[in-house]
Image 1 (cartoon, one colour):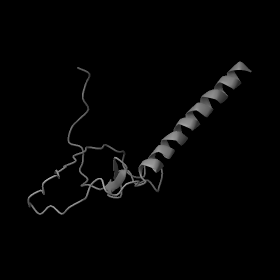
Image 2 (spheres, one colour):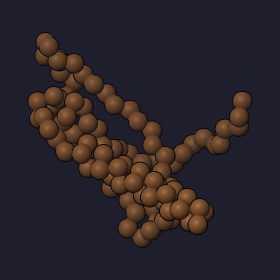
Image 3 (cartoon, helix red, strand yellow):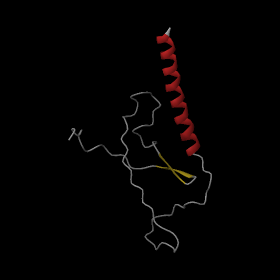
Image 4 (tube, helix red, strand yellow):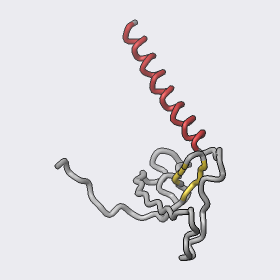
Length: 107
């Protein structure tokens, strides 16, 4: 009986953690304030006084598409990075490229 109760409690803990993660992603993808930043075309012009230029570089490693399910967007151009700065959210897309480094050993 103790093992069954322990297994039930562990299952509920895992399921609750997954539900909290999806709720956090859903809340973070909602724009609360539209006045935090503006996306401008890269025209090489001068930045107006009181503004700054932000360049975001990210490296993401995902599995190949279709490994876990048929409708998986991992490893495809549809995969987006969610960026939320102080309540303003934007989905960023990038250029896919194959990983060019091998596994690293423990140093």
